[in-house]
Length: 329
Picture (spheres, one colour):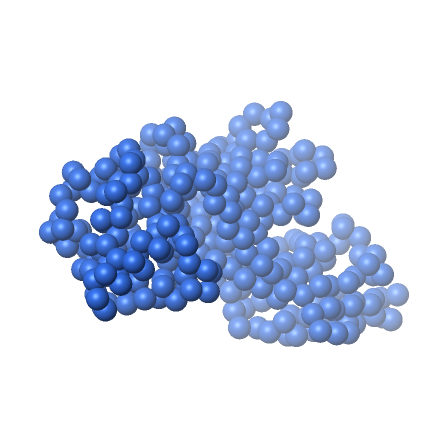
């Protein structure tokens, strides 16, 4: 492709002037291994024209983009000096690069990013500091395109597993509607669905500080889980097997001492279905422990639960109606 055409496409892409359909095609073209040097030169020429200030995250962020598009640091330095390069603003590309199931978000203006998963969907997200989030179904995370100088703040509605890059100068904080979790660098899971009665934080490694309204902070150690009851404000800390509590990331579903409604809600999110169980009146005091392996189908799970809990069911599209079986009436 001629250089003039490459310049025109890159400039139009970076200024977000393509339609969504065309932008997707351009993203695929950028990732291709053709005309790499010309694409990069066009990008740098555009960025150098911007009247912006240097930001510490600029170079590392653009370098991540370059890795996705086939560029490298040595190649960059043959085109423009590092000092000149770091004048580029925070940050640059108003798009996301999607490859291998990982989402890399490159900020253009320091606005808030909101990433959601639908029922039946999971996503892996790489944050501006290279921390990673594995987002479970029916969840939403919100974070700034560039973290502040004093902390790295992420808000969560739903469930997510965090692998946080250590930075002693910038605590990493996850806020939910009821709790906040503060860390420096660790691995932990937070489950905070707005339509569920409890919020849990489970620590895999490192150390976290969990704060609840009008309560003193609680420090968790590895393999500990804090459960907060939204209705009573009670807090309970228990020792758990994190390979079981975090099993949703590997395709398994493991329920330990769970209510029937907790199980049904999880299945709804996992399979994008609606389970109607209002006529069954299963008391919350009844608890169930059941483990489903990766690869077990929705029907296999429902049939097993029907035997354990005692119901029959009918399915119409994505709606499943449960009825208490006669033997349990």
